Length: 102
Image 1 (cartoon, one colour):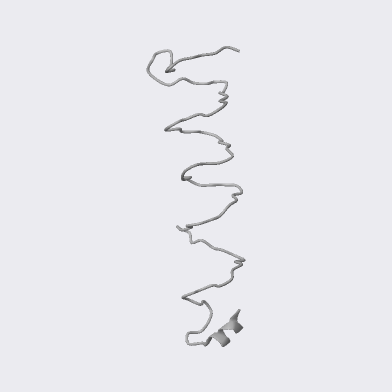
Image 2 (cartoon, rainbow, N blue to C red; image 1 turned 135 degrees about the horizontal axis):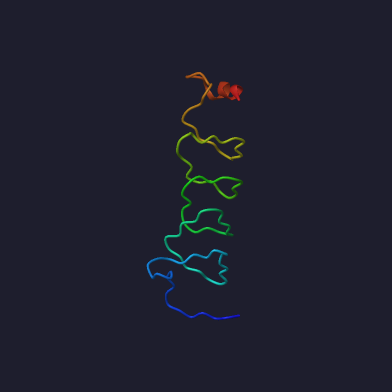
């Protein structure tokens, strides 16, 4: 295996970046800024904000959800729920009667 020790790699005209037509394998730590990837990125973790649309299965904690369309949450398991609006319960209904609407 050959070893290449350089401070800078540029294209043959010395006016841009190089292309890796057969890909590149990086072992160890790679530091990159301004990375723009077309295609698929696979990683065990991401650091920082994910911008754009996330597709597929996502696991972890969903915190700070907001936006349009509204966020719908089903099957909430909680100890205490505090609500300011009770949809479907007539105004002025006491709490005992309101429990009948569940």
